[in-house]
Image 1 (tube, one colour):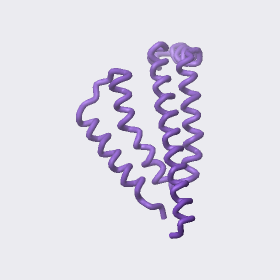
Image 2 (cartoon, rainbow, N blue to C red):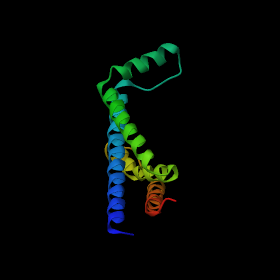
Image 3 (tube, rainbow, N blue to C red):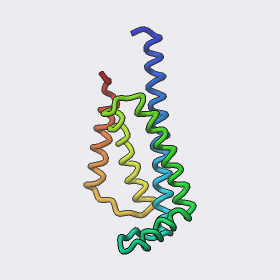
Image 4 (tube, one colour):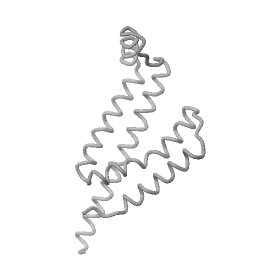
Length: 138
C-alpha cells in the first residue's frame, strides 16, 4: 500500500467516524428532547380517535418534541451519508455503538433503573461493534 492510498484510507476512516458521531449526537439530542417533551404531552392511548388526535396535537404544539423531531431528521440525513459510504452490514452494526450511552442518558437524565444484565448486554454489543468496525469490507 502506498503512502497516498494509506492517506486516503485514513481520511475516509476519519470521515466515517465524524459522520457516526454526528448521527449519534443528533440522535441522542433528538430522542432526549422528544422524551422530555412527551413528559409534558402525556401518554399515547388507543382509547378513542379523539385521544389519539389530542396526543398528536399536543406533540405538534410542544417545542421540545418539534425540536427533537428536527434533530432526529438531521441524524437521519447523516445516516443516509453514512450508509452511502459503508456496507450495510457494517453501517448497521456500527450504529449500535450508541447503546451504552443511551443507557447512561436513561439512567442519569431520565432517572430510569438500569440493571446489571442490561449493562452487560450493552457492553457486549459495544465489543461486537468494535470488532465489526475494525473488520475490512470486501
